[in-house]
Amino acid sequence: MFHRLRQDINSIIERDPAARNAWEVLTCYPGLQAIVMHRWAHWCWTHKMKWLGRFISYLARIITGIEIHPGATIGRRVFIDHGFGVVIGETAEVGDDCTIYQGVTLGGTSLHTGAKRHPTLARGVIVGAGAKVLGGFTVGEYAKVGSNAVLLKPVPPGATAVGNPAHIVQKELNAVPNPFAAYGVTPNGDDPLSKALRGLIENAVKQEERIERLVATMKAAGLECQSVPECDKLNSAQLNKLVE
Image (tube, rainbow, N blue to C red; front, side):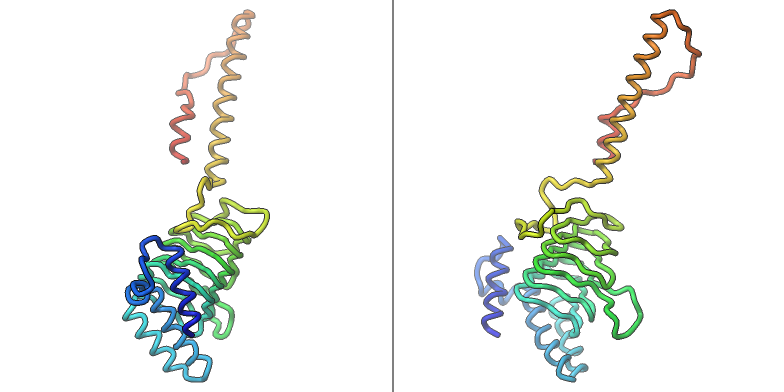
């Protein structure tokens, strides 16, 4: 028990630059306290003392602001940062070395008792603040879920998901441990929808330029073109700002 607690404290110090020492983490970090109390509640839950397990999780919610159902499975070195408003459902599974920020919900979308209703976070997953992961699917190893995303489908290992509903913005070819990204923010990550819109804008601008050249060439050759009403030219710089 003390070995696991030591691992938890060390992992928090590694991932949080505000953590100064082990004593501060032990006494002032509700995420760690919630994990410790969950282990007591989970032990009771799995040893046919379900009411006691629920009561311990209820006390943990009052003390820490974090609600973890005693039936949930929590791995080693899981860090719930800040933590207020985190909700983890009964059949949720959180793998080793995961990081979960405040306001995250690992929720279920099914009403069938005994079914796998809540998500599974594989090793090293980062879930940003306010994200909602809803359903009995798996988020792959070292994947990232951006802040305030609403995730309703599986995420491949090493990928990043953002938006509502969430979509993949980055996918690594090989699932390898990525550098830690606070709040699931990936450096230089870009939204594929924004990329597509920027491509369409640039294409439309080029088409407009070609049409103007064709009309000018035809007039220079003495060919009259039927006049059409003038319209505003596309401003690619202004339109690209709207989709950044």
